Every structure is written in C-alpha cells, then in structure tokens.
Image 1 (spheres, rainbow, N blue to C red):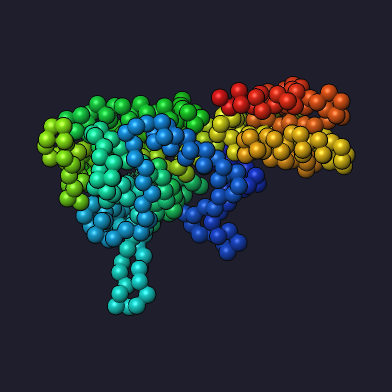
Image 2: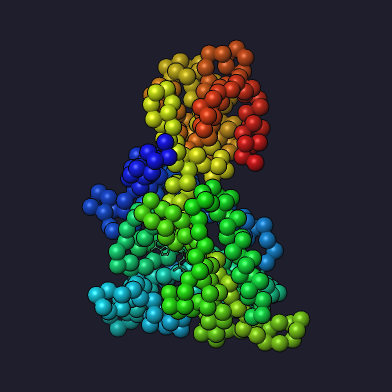
Length: 405
Ligand code: GAP
C-alpha cells in the first residue's frame, strides 16, 4: 500500500486541497499568479491550528518571550543596514538577482520612496528590540516572537506551497549572552523538533543538516536546516541560525545588563519556521490510503487537535424533520458552541459523507438515527478505524474533550 500512496502523491495532495476547500491557486479565474496561493476554509483552519500551537508553546506557556506584530513595509534603511540590499540575491544567468520585492510608497512623484515587502519577519523584531527592552525590562536570555507574511521575488516558484513569492513565517529571535550561544543553539534544536512532533510531522522523514561555510546566509555563523523527505526530494522545512550580534550591531542597538552593570550586544539564536511548508508537511504526513468496502479510500490522519474539523454532525436522513431537529438542536448546537470547529453535513448518503470527512481529516462523524429518538444515543464513527460506537448525547462533549487532550 505504501508504494501506491507515494505514486503521484503531490498531485493527490494538490487536488484534494482544491476539491475539499483547503488551498487554491492564487487569482485562479484570471489564469493564476505564479508563486501565490489562496486559502479556503479548511486550509485556514489547519494553518491557524499550527500557528496557535506554536504561539501557545513558545509565547503563552513561557515567561521569557515577547510577541510582536510589526509592519510588513519597512524603511528601506533597515534592509541597507542588514546587508539584504547588497546580499539577498540568487544567481540568474551568471548575475546576482536581488529577490526582495520592491514597491513604492507615496503618491506625488517627488515624494515617492522605494520600500521593500519584508523578505523575513526577523527584522520586524530587531527594529523593535529597544522598544521591547524599554517597555518590559526583560533579563537575558529572552526572546521575541512573530508570525507574519514574508515576500520573496523567487526566480522559479515551484512545488505547490514549498517555494512561493508570498508566504508566512513564525520566527523567534532569542537573545543570549555571547558566551551562552552554543547552549541555547542546542536547546532550540530540541524545541524545534518537539514542536514538529506536536503538530504531527512524520519525524522519520526529518533530517538535520549542518550548512557549510559557503552556503550559509550572510548573517549566520552556524545554521542547521531541518530537511524533510518531500515527494520531490529532501529539502528544507525549517532553519535554526546563530545570527551572532550581526543584526543588533548593524542597527546600532545594545543592551544594559543591570545585574552585571555592563553594556553588551546580545547574540541571537533564531529558530525560523515557514508555515506554508509546515502545512504541506502536515498534509503529506497525514495522508493515508486503505481499503474500505472493496474501495480505496484516502484520509488525512491529523491529530484531533490539528484537524480543521473536530467533528461532523449528520441526521441519518435529511428528509426526516424529527431527525434533523434532534441533530441540530441537541447535538450540533452544543458541540458547535463548545468546540467551534464542528460542521453540519447532510449531503449525499452516509457512505459519501464519511468519505468526504475522511478526506478533510475529520476524526469523528456523529450520526443521529431513529434509535437516537428513543434512547438519546448517537453513533460516533472513528476516522482511522471506521469503527462506530454508541455514545450518550449527554456524554458527547466529554468524550470528544478526552480525545482532544
Ligand atoms: N529569518 C531567517 C530566514 O528567513 P530562511 O531559511 O530564508 O531564513 C526561513 O527562511 C523559512 O521560511 C524556511 O525554512 C522556509 O520554511 C520558509 N521559506 C523561505 N522561503 C520560502 C518560500 N519561497 N516559500 C515558502 N516558504 C519559504
């Protein structure tokens, strides 16, 4: 079965994403725009679950992390100071092509200024380093965290979400005393792997790759790429860089260590995730096929906490008002109020509904049938095994809460 799954896996994922409302080509009705994608209802939900998991783990659950949401447009002096204007380039026909996306600000000709759509979220944090220190007085080590869009004028966007011109990053700049950098580099390596595991990445396909001196970004003294075995080859999923004091120094920023009464430039460890690649890897890791009722079925085996939909509620027959009313009032409404990510599905016969929910990755399908009207129980069908059990309506919320934990 595994060989069969690997056949045309990317095509299967791309077509499932479109068919089931996860991800569409950008500007599709006008022929598309290379390197852009639009997100549908379930894609947004999956992406939000990944972002929320990251924010909870690295910001809300910690005492040493400060959130930021900086402007995408930044003064072009930022990119001159960081070396991006000079160095952020890819080779194109023997020349270096700067991959920052340039734009113009201002309406009157004489006032027009060049600006760039940020190629990394990182600088939005570095330029707010002083604001953060002044506002919160953090002690070293501490970090800044940001989730947001980044833009690169990639020469050859390709492989679905893998290489786009507009994408999203989740980045942390972790400030440490210079002598502590190795300790925290190791620490963030472990945290990176544990986050991937939490969101359901197939860890057997993740590889740590040490990046050599000639291949590192201009700001980094040590980089590890976490690569994933995609169907199109083993390539980068996320990165971990030791940015030294490169950025703070170039922005002429420093820090007073009040305990030691000295002025220093902290060094930076940067765990950086591309959300789009994480979504792609989450989809690839979750995709399974098996045989059910003599047919091949495809299903996304998301962890319940990551699934775009936690449960779907159906009346067995949609032309029986007593079933519809019960399902709506006594099952769907309370579950929706409790979990939010709950959908009503009465389209087609039950078999078709199950297949559809399997492809969306819905862990539980709940059906209200004629027995429900007499004994207040419903069937709950498990996505992975296809098995059904009868659960008391009064115990449904608790039952699902336990599965989410
Ligand atoms: N601040 C460091 C930085 O931006 P990077 O390795 O250039 O480092 C970080 O980018 C992450 O952003 C990558 O590991 C990848 O997940 C994601 N990424 C980079 N370029 C991308 C692109 N064109 N399309 C989708 N994701 C991209």
